[in-house]
Length: 366
Image (tube, rainbow, N blue to C red; front, side):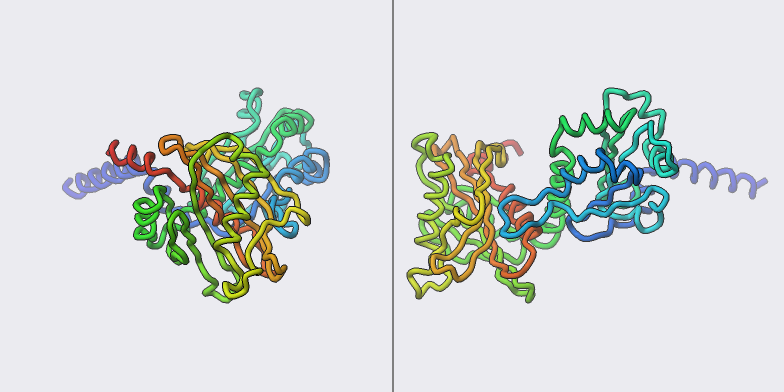
């Protein structure tokens, strides 16, 4: 009787732990997502992949990152036939499932099981859902679905760039976690706030290269023999008019800054940095940066002596409270190397920009 009583208690305890801690247990059992940055695995019917629907998806995720000196797509694409999606492939970081009800192939039937036919039938107005940590920790899964492939192709065509933008943001989220997992440069962060009236999260490995009145240059020199030197500089001025946000004036301001502060060789006066507006298109967009109105430009810089060059990304950001505009810029020096992931890193760091008044408001709310 005593033995039975103890067994009963053990069963109830086990059931209690199972019901109350199911999420914790599930999370604990998941392995970390695997793969290289910028990889995207697409699981769909092979005939659809080779047809119109596949072409629409390829044109989105395989488009080239703007502002790079040579073509580099946003993602390295891996097509997976649904019947082959098993074992280690389920642990990759980024997965895209595509399914339609009119696919008659075995692969089409298999991929529908990942979404369920009933869900597709019950949600005719939807064509996308996303989940995280489905098979692995740190994983992002996007499902695209429709009654027919023509219907789904039309919805994707009407939402051009959605897949690319979705996974690009998820890549930056994952990159941010990796960047700030090790010690953050809190001393640099505080210097920027106190001396230059803005805040930015600077990861470990970066240092202040130059700190002058109204100009700061932050750098991660090449210490790994990978040939990649990452740089950020920031300056500001009084806000006079909207003309400061035109592409022409933004480029002129950048050239003015770099002609004074950035040189291939400081002992050679003509080796200053300038933008290259002849050999590659300058990409120009409006956006919000840290909740502030901003304009973005992406392009190529070179030294005046044509010694070296590379990509840059710049923002002119409006600080309403201080009636100022900030020029923040990230550029890399990496001759012969791929540049996509380094520029994605700089973009991630620049996205942490906040004005002094924003930080004061945040501190007051605590």
